[in-house]
Image (tube, rainbow, N blue to C red; front, side, top):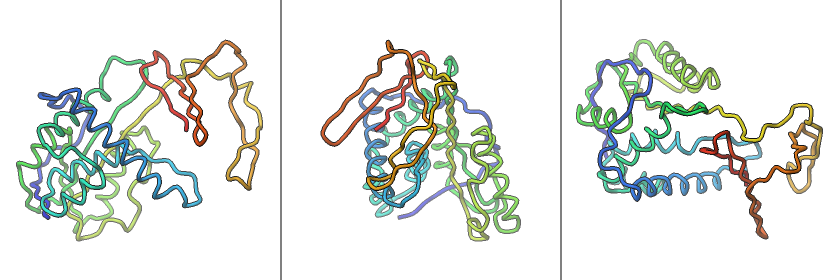
Length: 258
């Protein structure tokens, strides 16, 4: 397989609408289903590492979808087998754009934004067609950096962008030593969310309760609680699974706790 790119000099800025022309409900559903399938499969691979896990399947899938757009041959086949992207470009690309625009819509009470960026070695030749495609469907803008002579400065530039996009929630995405003089392209996705619960938790009702870390170990942790007996949540329970849905204000978004 091969990856083909060409650098530009535009600095990533605020997210603007991308081209969702041709997007269909079925296409969007196929991308969402692919992301969900990858999320569950990836979790199965990392769930036994013994530590708390927090990751964004959307961020991972989006960054690698941008890479997939430039992949060919066996590389593309292997990436598709892991991320389950729709193979038809006329389905995948506008669907990804539609989701990007929905996340970044402006008239909303909560904060939910995503941004993509490409960081290219300044004197390395990439395919212009690829760069234009990423800008058109993913909103990815290219910044030229000098990984060869200014590796640490380049790392700081990328990390500063991520910190800005996530309002300083992620401060050191790329640790020292990851980039080197052989680096030619870095693709990044940042996503930020902040919302208010539809039913607010009163801080005064937080109490120390048992939390089961494993079947053999229980610890005490501060837990939120609701005293309002009229509050109802969507809930499902089977022999092996419990699912609780907690809606955010305006009920456009919700958190599913499994």
